[in-house]
Image (cartoon, rainbow, N blue to C red; front, top):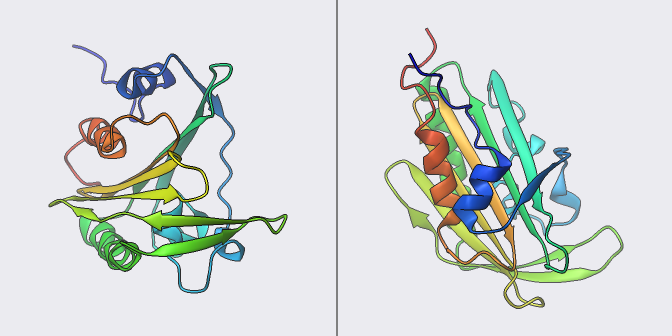
Length: 193
């Protein structure tokens, strides 16, 4: 009998997937970015694993980890991976469908993000990729060429997989989808009884 891998990939596994030398775990604290966003912008499309997005949706358990690159002199790379487990597939489907609606509305939009110090940053969402059981969208920071936030949301049975990869050295435009697939392959197929 072999041991199953942990649900979430390790820093070393993600670094290998992304082709970076190393990643280090950093503290994750969900916060409410609504003060930074213009009215009506989707918080779910903007950031992974945000409390306001998932509060009241009925999830029973969630696991989340955040990593950052450790290479000196690099502009930065940040990865957030999360899994939300719902009592049944119908509850997960409901949240996935609502996020899909919001992500569709974000596709192609330009938004202004206002940081806590008042500095404004302009971002542009690319096209939405819709697969049978996953969504993906990239957000580019217009005043920092090359800086991109990749988002992916996937559903498997009673679980939602929420991914964000942000940085200027993300070579593969589908890295967030790739990481979601790795996690999806580790989720037991059966829903809780």
